[in-house]
Every structure is written in structure tokens, then in C-alpha cells.
Image (cartoon, rainbow, N blue to C red):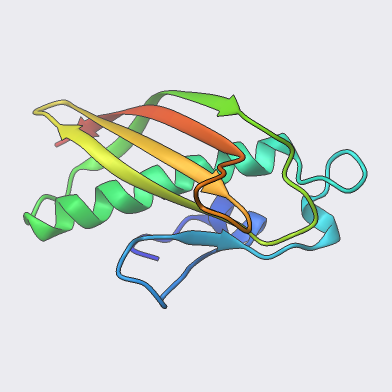
Length: 127
């Protein structure tokens, strides 16, 4: 990962180095289960948030910016239940301003074209 996060470690989020995109993956295990047979919604939301941070930090570092990130808000749309399978997320940076960055993220399992959740996040840049 481009940054170290104890929360990302706790939920098991790992950078997928098989691609150029900053895709994070959580392998299925019983600790991420919420209702029987499904990934807990909080794990999905956390993965989406970590994907936004990952993409933003990579973009900031590419321009030599070392701003500290502070979340303003995250809005998650759950589209379907995440089943017993590995779960992936990737974010895109929509805009980096002087004080705030905007990001969007998608989360999927077997088929990226069928997301299980999406998110929008606003992040304060503390320079």
C-alpha cells in the first residue's frame, strides 16, 4: 500500500500488485462476515474509504505533495450483498483542490462491472 493504516491491516486490505491501478483486496475469511454468508457492511465501507486514501496519496506523492489527510465525509451506496468471496475496491480522484479532495470508489467481488457498493468521499488536505 502507498500508506500504512492499522485499520487497513485489521480488516486485511492488501494492495493488488498484479495491476497498475491501486486496487485493494480483502480475502474472504470468517472475521469479515456480518450476517451469515455475507461480508459485513462496515468492512465494505472501510475498504472503500481505504481505497480513496490509497488513490489520493499516490496522486499527491506523484506531485511531491505530502499533505495530511483528514476525512470530511463518506457516503456509501450498498447495491447488493457481498457474498463469501474476495472483495476488491478501487478509487478515482475526481478533484484535488487547495484544501479539499474529492474521490469516488467502487467495490466488487467476481465481476467489476457488477459493483456491490460505491462511495463518494471528501477529504481535507492539511498542508
